[in-house]
Length: 550
Image (cartoon, rainbow, N blue to C red; front, side, top):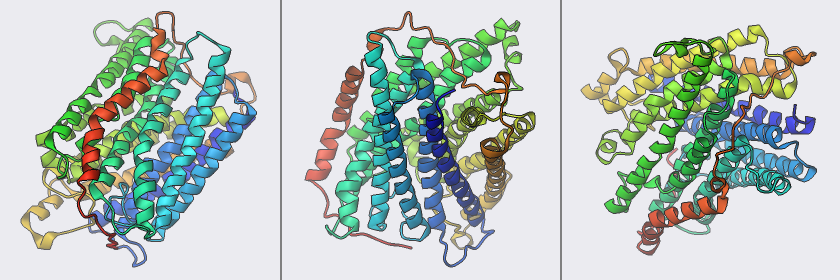
């Protein structure tokens, strides 16, 4: 069990994460009913307010606070309790991130920042919204450097040794995050804040979007890598086996550092101002990310088979029946992995030149986002929640809560399947994203969006309703495990942090040469971004004044 002070740190992050989760999922519920023309919002509340709040609170705030809770717990477990300086710095980082979150959320809810999750210019929010974003990033950086300091102290005491796999993966995730945030920090500090406060008259829209997507795509892997950490390190422990291959796991994470950054233009394939050569280069680099994802799939399913056969599974698929299906910690993560298969396939479609033209500004993209972040990432975080909170609070994961957890995971799966499938199909039929309900004056094409079983905004609303009910059940489980579940009085009743053993005997030490991988990543970034960004600055259009359309 990690120290009391370290537990308080992790629990504080979890509490903020789930407060954001409650508000964000409620905003999502309102959205699907507005899109279905089944709800009229009050005059003081606008669709684009709830759309912005939904995206920011779930995609940025919930994920970030939960990830840091997971990383803090795992680093304290794998490398030992934090020292006073590291702990103090983590509290400062938590405080600054929370202040930024409160400021940003308050401005969204007050109607002064309905600029959506991507905050695209020339839509202009209050300058304090961008100050809040900056504080949020700065807070995460403070926490990140604290965890790096803890890792560095361990390395100094264990010279020549490879760090534990969880710690290695944590540092990989943090390095990815720090480099990714450079883009959003540059555009917020040097473009948005001066523009929003009126210090400059216009903003270079193309440059701001390019800098955002330099951050926006590796952000996806900042969400995904902690889920992969659970798949690589937690799942084998639940299966009663070791990590399949320590060196393969480390190599996969290193490859994410290299290939997560120089790919942002594949989000801008329909935008002018970027030559087709640079778009093509970044599309090619995008497909390189498939390699570590396939390595992960191979490693995880090999772990499944090894575990199942050790337990007596025979024949081609006999091992499958021997997996611990009655353990909600495992089943939730396994379902999350299944969702990632169509999610990854959809990502390949989105990153393709010709196919992107078909789906770019449609509900297909929203469906893809939910089936990648809302299912694999969120459901893995749910599976972690079921054991992490009891581990931190010293309370028992009772049988009744485990039954509720199964109901929650199943309902979330059903709701996500209905909603995301409807969104994908509606996108193929041309239904737009980022918009409230529009009947287009009864146009025949628009009316088709309300026909059919799956190709229907009603189906999307049904799925969204099931998701919201599942989310409220999850919040009940979280509150129970946090405050009301009985305390574990015997060692056998205590919930463990399931961290599998990893054999480092054959792992090359150069895989932990951070300066090598950071250097290669920066070289790839310069190759992919230096010339096109220089062109955007040197040959920039006149610039755009701010627009407030709400």
